[in-house]
Length: 190
Ligand code: 5GP
Image (cartoon, rainbow, N blue to C red):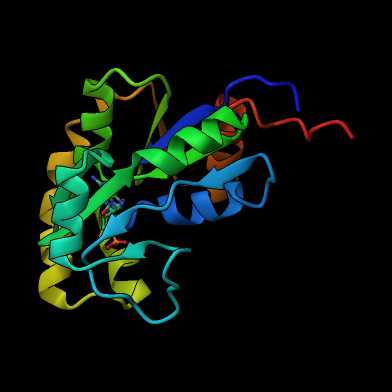
């Protein structure tokens, strides 16, 4: 441990762009930790409270807002999501790379706050691929998919706000690029 402050690594992109898969692989590196957001969205099968999200009701979420616990928060697809300040600060102080997987609106909000970090936009190769991925993962109803696709178009317009845009046509190549950008390409020396 060098005592150096860590890096906030913000990964954004439309639903279905592959950002979750990229984040999962990045998290295999012990230098990387996940910033666990709070959300009012119902838990999905396979998710764990305190691991994927802190699942809270609307009232608890509002308390967090009033207490100033969030760095940013937003309503996404009808649910509330927020990035908690406390865990983020702790991890950065411990020198970790703190991975913030966030929608484009949230990523833009963080950028507006001028919080130091690396802002990476993961782009799908094209909209047809995006549609196929959303349908293929089987987690969303058709109307939710249509909503996500419409939003994806708007989100693509904001990619210029990010420090880097990584097109996810070849998953391993995209992952390597993100690792390189975040300075994680070399394994830590023992
Ligand atoms: P999901 O419900 O599929 O897990 O996430 C829906 C969207 O909310 C995703 O685009 C996700 O990145 C975003 N999201 C997750 N956590 C946060 C957060 O703390 N703040 C904001 N603004 N968006 C978030």
